[in-house]
Image 1 (spheres, helix red, strand yellow):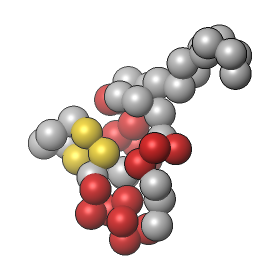
Image 2 (spheres, rainbow, N blue to C red):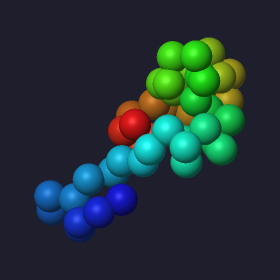
Image 3 (tube, rainbow, N blue to C red):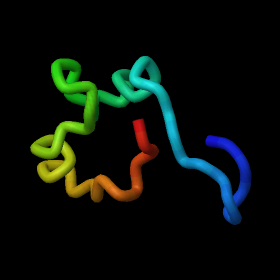
Length: 48
């Protein structure tokens, strides 16, 4: 996460994202099924 509300970026890398258990290790993207099961909207997560 960098910057501020005005112009900042909400990003992370795959090594950090994989620790949340929300990332699919095969596709290197957020696992939609897991997010849906847990009720987590993908748009609130940092971009990978």
